[in-house]
Image 1: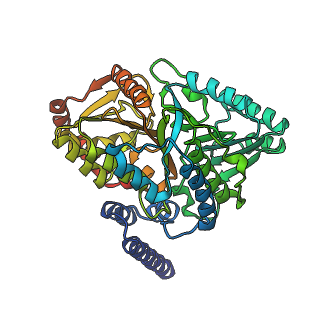
Image 2: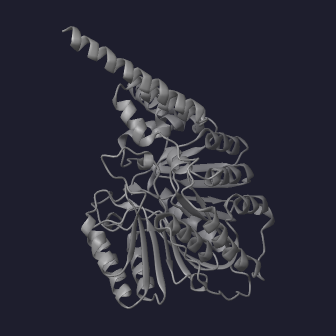
Length: 476
């Protein structure tokens, strides 16, 4: 009995020491206060399990140099050369500071001469994608969070294999956690046909690792260096199948023109990340002819957890603070940082028409509950909240003042702004902006506006649960 009690005391002492050490690690990492408090609550209030969660999800990678700065410099110089060659480049005065900010942060250069097609369903996107794949002559580059082993995924995989057999260089990066449920043989079949396939930051057990928390959420496809796709859709049948009112609604772009250089650079940096192979041939950055009127202006902006700056978060904040008439936004997950809440409030209080569409029913109940606690913060300032009811709206877009729009992979939450590798296209072209604005207006037809009075009088148990989950929102 005495020995049992002794061992129990020793184990308890070891556990307390571990919790103290991990708590010190959280405090000295100088994260945002909300995130620091959330992790301390997990470590202190959830015995044993909290320590395991921290080991997997809590350790920061900001100081770890996964990507060679040398490779990024080489690829940036290639993009810079094409940037300098632009004879029709005209920077709009009303967004000069935003464009300069992105260019200074991660060499997200502005490129003119772009044509943009907007897709709002898998029925539109995937036929266009398959057509582009079949037309490929030199290379096909793909980054995707999820590449599902379903009917659509198999169709795309078959198309890629056909092109590889024709001699086209096909390279694929998929996220290891996003594809945890996909069988290895699905990707092995493509590898056996000569396709370069890499899992992004693979997580292997029993080794404990924080890699689980830092995922490549980008959706980028580049065909021959002159056609690219970016947006919110993964390669999965969920965008074309589903019962009534249960399909996934999403937004994706097809870009042809100089902005594809930005998509290509993002892929090649990630390719070096996973393969340690530098690809910098002229064939990856083919010459694009000038359009008489300069074409649409666009920037491809990426962000990641090891960057010095939260590029996308800072970009969204500047858009909100510079808006004069309206800002319309869609996101499937609304767990905003303090900076974004401040910008939303400031924008709405200045008399700008700020509207936000979120799903009525999301795909994660805990996130839904935590999200509602943040609605109070922005409703009071005059932000209009709309619940989308026709299925699950997975779209991530922004449109402002008829002269700026953005579409990509980033959600309005802590995970996208701080933990994930994300990418968005920012477009300064009135024609494309009008298309994205119409997408938002069409989506509003399937929404109900949040009644603030009814929302304020929701049951106490709901408000309590939302408030408790809010404490953990930086970790969801």
